[in-house]
Amino acid sequence: MKIKTVSTENAPAAIGPYSQAVIFGETVFTSGQIPINPASGNVEAVTIEEQTEQVMKNLGAVLTAAGSSFEKSLKTTCFLADMNDFAAFNEVYAKYFTGKPARVIQHEYDHIEGKVFTDHLAPLRRNLIKNKLQKMARGSYRAAYKTKR
Image 1: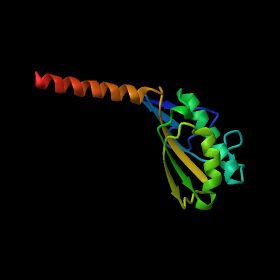
Image 2 (image 1 turned 30 degrees about the vertical axis):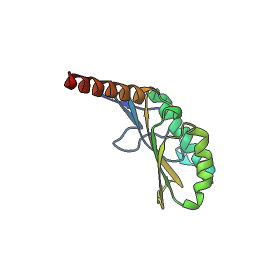
Image 3 (image 1 turned 90 degrees about the vertical axis):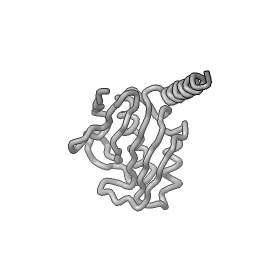
C-alpha cells in the first residue's frame, strides 16, 4: 500500500521532516497538534480552554483535509502541562470527540508552545473496523467449518 501525505493551510505547517498527517490504507495518522493559530503562526490563546479549542480546530482541519472527522476517531493521545487543567481540557475535548474514542492522557508535558498537545488516529470510513472484524470472523468460521468436514 502507498502512503499518502496530507497537508492543509488551515492548520500549522509542519516545521520539520514530517507531515501534518498520513493516510495508509483506510487509516489516517495525524501528527501532534499544538495551539498555534495557523493564520499568524503564533500561540495566541492563553487559557487551557482557548488553547484546547485551537488544538481541536487545527486537528479538525487536518482530519477534513484527509477526508476523515472527529466522529470516526479511534484513539487520541493528549499531553497536558498541568493536570490541574484536566477538567477544563476535558470539557472542550468532549465537544469534539462525541464518539468517545480510546484516549491516553500524559501529564507534566513541558512543551515550549502551550499547555496542551494531542495526536490522533482515525479510519477514513466509520465502519472500516466493523467490516474488518466481520471478515475476520467469517474467515475463522470458514476455517473451523472446513476442518470439521
